[in-house]
Figure (cartoon, rainbow, N blue to C red):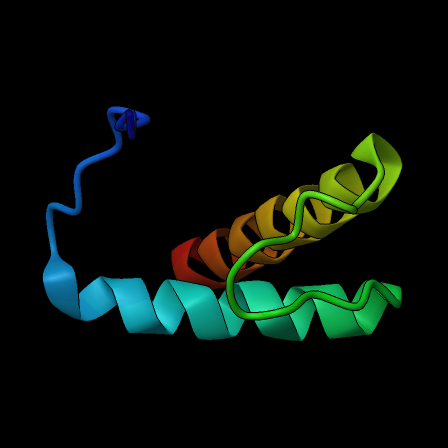
Length: 66
């Protein structure tokens, strides 16, 4: 039985852009992400990708308000 994680795509056009952003962030921190299943990543690797994405989003926001 398949379960949904509850995440809903509110802006379908953004899904591809977010995926591209995630892959770029992973490359920057040296994590080998694949399209599809990435369950073999360590928590540290996954966290570094997410952390890098947040860092870049905050930097972009800060640049926009100056």
